[in-house]
Length: 110
Image 1 (cartoon, helix red, strand yellow):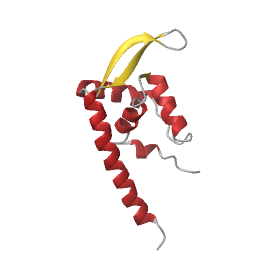
Image 2 (cartoon, rainbow, N blue to C red):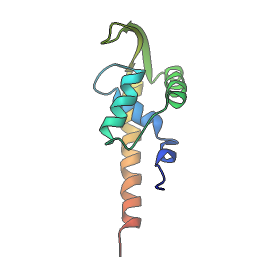
Image 3 (cartoon, rainbow, N blue to C red):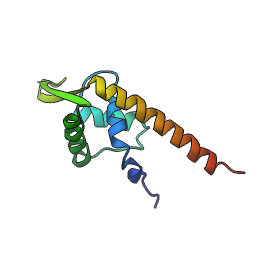
Image 4 (cartoon, rainbow, N blue to C red):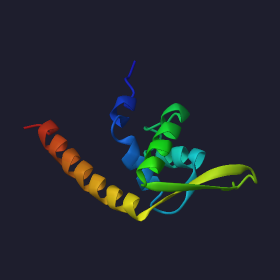
């Protein structure tokens, strides 16, 4: 049985969520689907991880939320980046790109 890469999400969920909001506001379900679709169905975000992360990022001032109607005309909380969240996304993106480049170098066949 093939192992799933869910454990790779530890420490990366925040930057994935911030990236999902870079193009505009989304509600929680749309954030999770965007990450899943963009990753080619490899990364799956569970509600039990997503909503605590959204709460934490809201408390840190990286995102803000407001209630609005979803595309299905249901009341949903929509999240958007703050200026501080955009700065955090830029820093974390650079850090992860550097990190993944280093890991790729180590894993390449000699």
